[in-house]
Length: 430
Image (cartoon, rainbow, N blue to C red; front, side):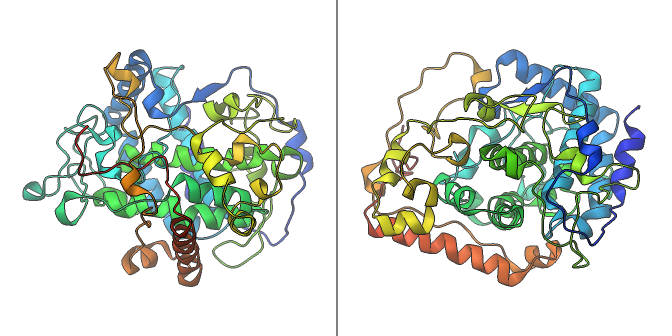
C-alpha cells in the first residue's frame, strides 16, 4: 500500500540536543489540508458511521495491518514511552493507522473513547459491550475475547493467538482517572513536558494495565481499543495546544530516552518526517480535528488562530467552582482566576456514563442523576503495578508523584462533601 514506506519509517527515531519551541522554517511551508475528518467520541457515531468504521477496521485486519502495527509498536516501544516523544510519536502513529483505514473508506476517522465518562466503572462501559469492542476475555479459554469487532480475530504477532483481555480478579476494573483530575492536569500544565507526564502516567497507563491481555503488552495496537484510547490521549493534547495556540502549537520540551534535549527538528521516523510536521492539526498530513475542538469554536484548519471559547455549562463545572479558593488555586488555576475559562481545558462536561451508543439508534434511556450516596465518596483511581512500570521504562518517582497528586485531590474534594456528577450507586438497578 502507498503508505507502507511512511509507516515502516516509524520504526526508528532520531534525537538531537537542541530545545526549540518556535516553528522551524519548514513548518511554514506545510500546506493546509483540502479536507479534514472529524474524530468523534465513539458513543456519538451514527449507525452509518459505526458501520463504515468497523468495516474499515475489519478490512485492515484482513490485510494484516493490525498485525503490522502491533509488530511496529513492539519494535520501537523502548524509545517512545516515558519521555518527550510519547505524545508526538503516538499522534503520528494513530494518524498513519487512520490513513490506512481511509484507503478502504475515505470518510472514516478514528473515534476517541473518552474514558473519563466511564471512570467509576470502566468494565461496564457500552464501548466494551459485545456489540462494539467486546469485553473481558474468557479465563477458561486463554483469555480470548469472544464478542465485539475482534471476537473472531486470529492475530499472528508475536504468535498465532486470539485477541486477549484480562480484567483481573472478579471480572471487574478498578476506577480510572476522573474528569475532575484530568481537568486539573490540563489547567496545571504550563509546558509540553508537564502535559506529557500528566497524561502518560495517569489516563494513559491505567486502561492499558486494566484491560490486560494484549493491551498490557508492547504489541498493544493488536487490540482495536488501543486506537480509540490513543485518539483520546491525542485529543487532550490537541485541546491543550488550542487553549493558547500562539504559544503551544509548537511547544515541545523535555528529553528523549537517552536524556538528550529534544527538538522540533528531531525525526520521528527514519525518513524525513520531523516532529514539527505533526504539531499542527489541519496542515501537512495531519488532516483531522476533534469534535470537542469544533464545539469549543476551534478551527479545523488553523490551530494557530487564537480561539475564544466558553466554559461548558455543566453541573460539575459549577460544583468545582464553588470549592474553597485554596483548593481552586491548588488544582484548578484557571477556575481560580475567575471569568471565562476555555472549554478546551475543562473536561467537566455533562456526561452520562449510562448513555447508550448512538449507533444503537433510538433507545429508551432513563435520564441520569448522580447518586447522593456517593457524595463525599469519590473513588480513587487504581495504580500502576511494578511490572507495568518496568515494561514502560517509566520513571518510578514521576509515576508515584502523579498517583499521590490524584489521591490528594480526591481526599480534598471528599473533605468538602463534593458530589461528582458522574457517580452512580453501582448496587442500584437502573
